[in-house]
Image (cartoon, rainbow, N blue to C red; front, side, top):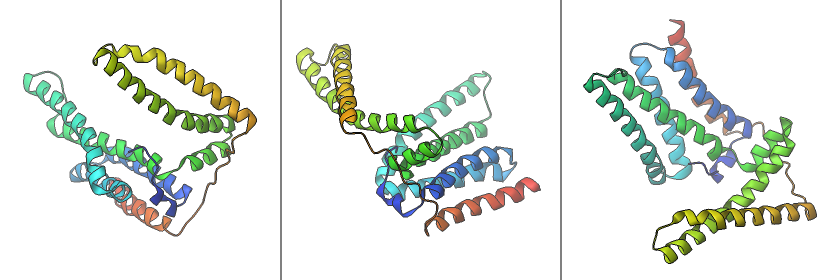
Length: 228
C-alpha cells in the first residue's frame, strides 16, 4: 500500500499531489454535512479510493491489503459497541460505523501519496521547498532500507535455527552492527561517487484531467450542500 506504482507515470506530479490532498480535504470538510450526505459522502470517497488502488495494485492485491486495515477498524468499532451495551460513555452506533469508514478513507488517501508519487518526484518536491539535505537523506535511507530488511530476514532465520524460535531479542545486536556498517559503507560510497538527487516535477499531463474531473465531481456537490 505504500509502494510506488509504475502506472502513475501517466499523471503529473502536481496532479497526483492535488488529487491526494483533495481527498483528505474533502473528508475533513464532509464532517460538517448533515443527514444522508453526512453518511454517503465518506462512503463515496472510500469507494473511489478503492477503485484507484485496485487500478494501481490489482483488485485482489488491494483487497488483501485493505482487509488488514478493515480488521482493525472492525475491532475498534466492536470495542466501542461493547462499551455502549455495557452503559459506558461511547458514541452512537452510527457514529462508530462512520468513524471507522472515515479512518479507513484517510488511510487510503494517505497511502495514495506513496503509490502515486515516486521517490524521484519526492526529491524534486523537497528540493524545490528548500530541503535539499533532507532529500539526500531520503535517498540514502531508501538505499539502506532494503539491505536492513535482508539482514533482518537472515538474522531471524539464524536465531530460529539456533534457539528454536526463542530469544528473538538476540536480533538486536547483529542488526544494530550491520546497520552501522552498511550506513558507513553508503556514506563512504557517497563521498567517492556523489548521488544525483535532483528530481523531476511535472506540472501537467493529459491524464490529469481524469483526476481533476473526479475532484470536481466530489467538490461541487459538497459546496452546494454546505451552502444550503
